[in-house]
Each structure stands twice: as C-alpha cells, then as structure tokens.
Length: 144
Image (cartoon, rainbow, N blue to C red; front, top):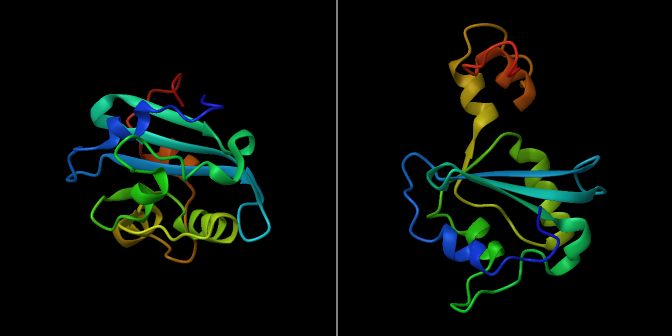
C-alpha cells in the first residue's frame, strides 16, 4: 500500500497493451458516491503481475494529480479515452471521482454491463464483483 505516491508507478503504466485492457481500476470507501469518503484506489495491472493500492485518505486531494518527470499523472491516465480501463461498478467510481476530484473516467469497459449482456437469466439486477468472482472465476473452494 502506498501512503506516498510512488514516482515509478506512472512509468510502469506507460506503453501497456490495450487489448485486452491492462488496467483494472477500483475505488473503495464509505458509501461510495457523491457524499462518500474515498479510502483506497486500486490499480490491477495484469501484464506487470502487480496490483497497486493507493491510500487516497492519506494522500488527500492531490492523489490523482502528482506528476512524474514527463508530466503524466494518474488523473491523466484515468481521463485518457485511449487507455482502456476495466471497472466493475462504474456508477459509483465515476460519481465519487467526479464529486471529490472533479474529473471524469474515460475509456471504461464496464464489467457489470458486460456480465449483464451475456447473462442467460434475469436482467433485473446488476451483480457485484464479489458475486461474479464467487460464481464465475475458475477458483477452487479454498481460494473462494
């Protein structure tokens, strides 16, 4: 977990393949949305076999604006429509980032909607990531 922004993170994210997406974005907090408190941002990067956990609570309002030596920021990566990002529940992530940090997530692959579109049963409810992992991931009972 990073409680200070690692300078190498943005360099690690440059030049990653875009098909399939190389970035899986997550935001955790209390009651995610307009009135929430964001605690942790996670970036899973399969090509690097790495998951970054960024302590948004500690880093505060500058979390997404720290720039590397090339002028890149995490805000820039998240706003870049040419960099595909997979997100489980884009509704809460987008609302939280817009409300607290005044920016929009672009280039999103909405995993909940993909699951809904391929589902062969009730389309009434969206399934959360934890339910999808328990039901669909190739995990044995110990891993679940």
